[in-house]
Image 1 (cartoon, rainbow, N blue to C red):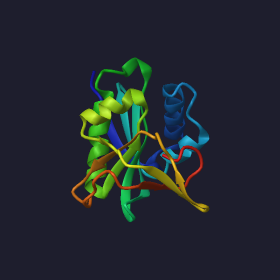
Image 2: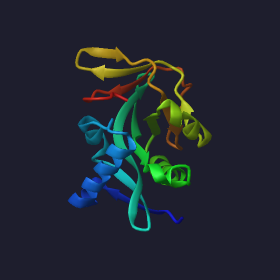
Image 3: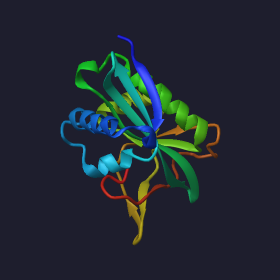
Length: 178
């Protein structure tokens, strides 16, 4: 099986490609992929994986501002990493993540994502580190604690000195905050 990767901003995806991508994500997340999740996926860079011309995997990197220990960080936030069920455990996710990580390391101060428990081991094996400090969201009403979010970070050459014990806060958005 040969996995082909394409990296493209949302603006370069056709309406048919976007519809196919949404269908892949809906199926991969067993119907638990909301309109808010879809919104979080758009506006950045997509990594699309195909096998024999069929879309079988996806990962996106979107710009978010996270604040660690009071310092704002230009963050490549990873969204909607998914592989079609028949292609799982065949190297698609690893190929996708290699490209996703290249985008993050090449253009951001920090990489971050929220991982489901089932995916945590994959990210940890690739060098993503669980954030052990507290997490929160910056809201119009102040700082809202967001414990137990499963946040992982990937340090880049531009990452400032962080212990991982500082408060890590994300910008506010509808749906899942992390």
